[in-house]
Each structure stands twice: as C-alpha cells, then as structure tokens.
Image (tube, rainbow, N blue to C red; front, side, top):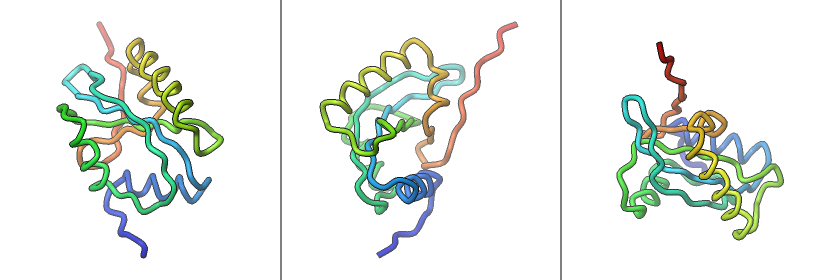
Length: 126
C-alpha cells in the first residue's frame, strides 16, 4: 500500500529510499529562536522502507520529552545502513560539530514541526 505524500519530509524520504534503498539517518531535534538554533536531542533511525511519514516521526519526537521546533536529518553514510554502534559514533561526532558550527545544519535535511523544508542562513553582523 502506497501512503500519500503530504509533507516535504515525506517526499524526501521516499525519494532518498528510491535512490539507494535502506539507509540510516542521524536525527537532531532543535529549538529555533529568532537568531539562534539550540540543539535539544539526537538519535539515529534505520530506514528500511519508504512507508514512514511525518506523523510517525512526530510520534517518535514526542517521546524525546523536549520542546523543539525543527529537526535536521543527516545520512549516516553513503553505504546505506550503518550498524548501531557506528551510527552512535557518527551521531556523537555530528552533534559535537554542530555545537561548534550551527551552519552545518545546511548540510543536512532541515524541517520544521509541519514537516516542511527549512534553510538556515548566517546572520550578517554590521
């Protein structure tokens, strides 16, 4: 049964799965302020089909028990599925890098609470 695509996230997941099959994603929940993006929680997920839709991700994120207004997804690696231990190591590495440089969010897939694609822009200081 093919599920309807209703968000940018749904479209991204279906297209990404179609292009390369199963893969592991690194997930970082964030709180978006007017001029800031604060990291909240992180996890990894193995995507083994294209049936996951945004509403299922919202259920997963609700279990994080933190406030959030955006989420960024990174592919754990080009090899597709990554073992859990390796996924945890890669997730820890990306979180460390994000603490140093929030602009790295632009290298992932960034979505708001409605599953719509976002972009991050650097502030211009005058």
